Image: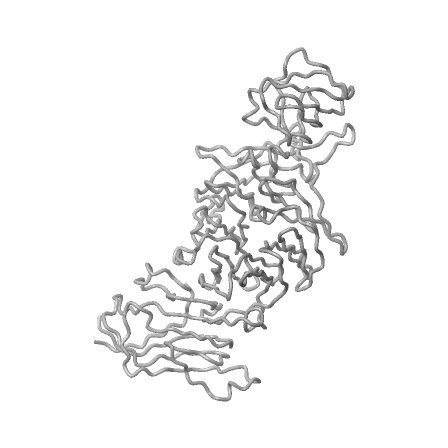
Amino acid sequence: MADFIKTQNSFADGEVSPEFFAHDNLNGLSKLENMDVMAGGGLKRRRGLESVAELNSVARLIPFSMGNTENYLIVLTDGHFMIYDGTTRIRDMMSPWDVDDLPKLQYAQRFGTMIFVHPDYQPQILQKSDDIFSLIPFEFERNDADMTINIPFMRFDDSKDIKITVTPNSYGNNYATFTTNQDFWTQNCVGGQLMLLNNQWQIVKYISPTVIYAYTNKQYNIPPSPVTDWYESAFSARRGWPCSITFHQDRLVFGGSREWPGGIWMSRVGHHNNFDTGTGLDDEAIFLTLLSQQRQEICTVVSSDNLQILTNAGEWAISSKPLTPSNVDIKQHTSVGSVTTRYLPPQKIEGATVFISNTQKDIRELSLDALGENYNARDLCTQAKHLMHNPVDLSYNPAIRQLFVVMSNGDMAVLNQNSALGISAWARYTTNGQFKSVATTGDETYVVVARGNEYYLERFSDDAIRDAEQYDFSYTAAALPMRASGHNAHMLRIRKIVARISDTKTIFINGERASLPNDIYDSESNGYTGDVCINFMGCQRTCTNAPWTISSTEQFRATVLSITTYGYYIV
């Protein structure tokens, strides 16, 4: 039997899974709910939520930040495309996407322009000019000389055996009838582009699965035999549209499409609507396809120091500087894979790219090694897998160094990370309802919360004690099971627990309310700072459970700097 005094003044590892409870080198907790780990290693009750607006349906949140004080929030609901400036809605437009389309919607911003892509819809451009927002379709650049479109063309697998017989058409000299040797055309081919006989053609009418009418700006000669060398536009209603998007080295980059999931299209430098590969000059457009033993489906593309390409099977990077058609250094670095069923926007954290793995149980940090040559994908939640329940959204707030990850069960896992101070602490956020989406714009983090059958837009606020001004929430921090001298304690008796607190009005230790000076309950008081204790007269604790728990259901701020436990044990 031995007496002990054990002080824990750092909680830098946050909540950890039970499988790590027997480790001696952890500054962790067995439970951390609705509390954050501070820069100094202590704990504080999370911020409350401030009401912003009631929504007509579940929503997707997207940040639209122009730097300095121009930080807007895009709220996409069923049929509505809304823009908020702080808590004020300044624009409400009709949305071109259905609510079921929102999970796969991706976007990229450059200055006052944001482009949205979805595999089933023509890309859309959000522009801000002065104080006016507008949403217009993305159009590929046309050449003034002949009005041809600078859209990429390619040969799809199902068209390789298709031969086209070209015959005159009664519509006029610039029209032709295209007849295929087998069923190929569909109704949604109309409006699409073809490259045939060195001309661009637009499909203007569907006649049957083997016959269409097409129009060209140029003259043409009827070929003596069926044409086998022809191409379709890479993007169309039939073939689908880009799945992912970013800007990199002044090129607009599309990653993958519905029917060419491994393709990467990069625009001409400085001409983001021009995807004509031309003759391969340094500033002209680039097209390539990811090739490996596994089928590569591009999930998203990220512009960092290199162009990062996240697929279902791994993480690739193009490191060429400058990036030109003749200088494309591309390789696969890791084999983690990303989620394909929805867009989970990768976040930039301390120079690394953080993304959700395809298992939806890992959150990975993609970063270069010390030599700056190879990427690794470190797991950020190795010790907190139990908090991961199929993530559906994530956002990082650099001002407070917090990564918010919304789970499918409505909880939120929050990572407080500061590598310089050795802090990587996960906690669980809960509310009276379910979190559905999250986004950070400027220094503000917003969430969509389902409360009952209603949906609300809310934001975290230092001034909010409750959630949405009316919903109480409790907090809990529980210690790891007791270990001593590198061994599990066999029997434990606790005489006293002392908590050093700051600016706190109420706190419970192991379920008992700690006595604080009466005058701190004065509404003008900021709370009590100092030590509070609970004496247990040698209370025996089960050694596999937490020796202490800090909690409260009362709606006051709470900060815990350290916990000291006094007692004796038998190993």
